[in-house]
Image 1 (cartoon, rainbow, N blue to C red):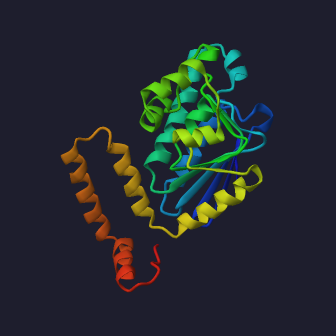
Image 2: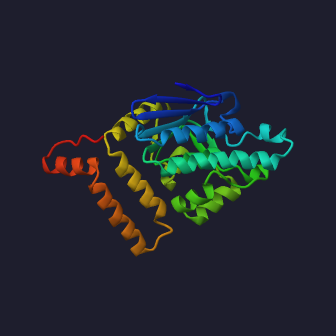
Length: 259
């Protein structure tokens, strides 16, 4: 385990586990946490990591920005911009790395915690978890990629409802809306996340990265541009060690052994 002040970082073979670790502050994001999260994300963006599991410690996943730290800053706007920049750097790295990001929402996800939660490639939620934007309640506006991901996940109308009314969604509601991959019992969340991470280690890292890259571009590309991206990427994948192994294993009717 590598020591950080506000997060836990544990590398076990191809799996990295990151835990937001300010339980006494509801895992609120201060300048230290987002800086450390950006650093941790960069360390995951290597061939050694196939899966990243991100969760929170204690009763909260993350209650959003640490308003107490913002309140005492001599220049609140400058501090918040720095916090947002580091959070955005982490999210961008997670989104563009080949490793699969599994987010296990263990409790309340509010504000930037909600924003971060739905950036996962796979999102597990404990039955007791809940989701609320909460930004306008504090006179603020959304960050953490919420204005990018939420409209793509649930559409503009529902996004406006969440952002303007601060409606709280239960875990089952979040699943019904398409924000969560799977809802599991509270006491089974950690085991389910571990099992899913183990499952993903048997897949091809580069193929997973290809899926992520294609889906990131799908709403900004025209049909022909997107198909050209698909054609170039699948051709490139076919020339890799894992691409050759996958095809050979399929034809030989055996389980592939990816790098």
